[in-house]
Length: 88
Image (cartoon, rainbow, N blue to C red; front, side, top):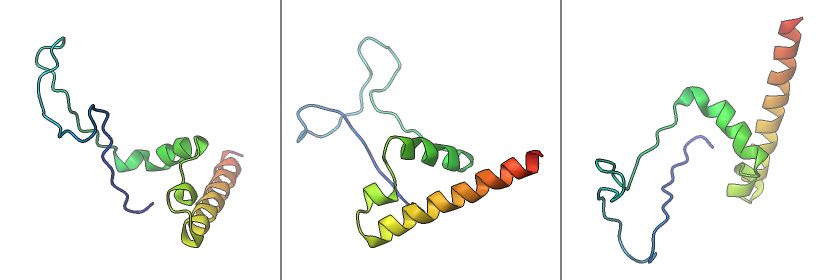
């Protein structure tokens, strides 16, 4: 996943637009937030997402997605072995 973007919302009814407003029981807090994940956390986040089944293979269920996931798993395996060797 070199360049993946997404927006996830939970609102009802789903066809209604989103209105940014203050949360009634939390004065000064908007009901919509932006979460920016630093690039330095990419490897760790991908590993966690993979633990839950979210991978290139899942998001792109074609030959490229499967190949991307296999390549990523192989790179992670090589990196783990390198780190283990560096410790000794």
